[in-house]
Length: 92
Image 1: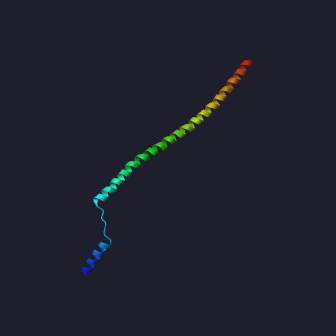
Image 2: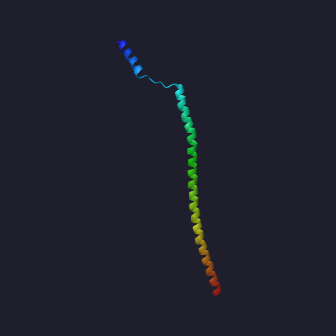
Image 3: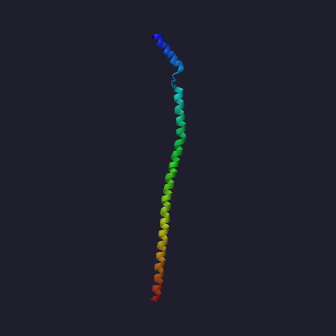
């Protein structure tokens, strides 16, 4: 019976050899992941910073446009008051 099991084990090892992962393969995978991370993380960080800065710039642009419109309204109001004062001064 042991001869049968030995024969089956040998046939099994020939037909489907077991692949063991050695230390060099493990180091190769670790180095590959390190290089990929080294190149991708700065890119992701820079893109994130650009996104946040552009969002802040957009918010400031909206505030600037709003203040410009308010300035136009206030200037028109001041001109109206000046005109009324000039007409009232000439009447009295």
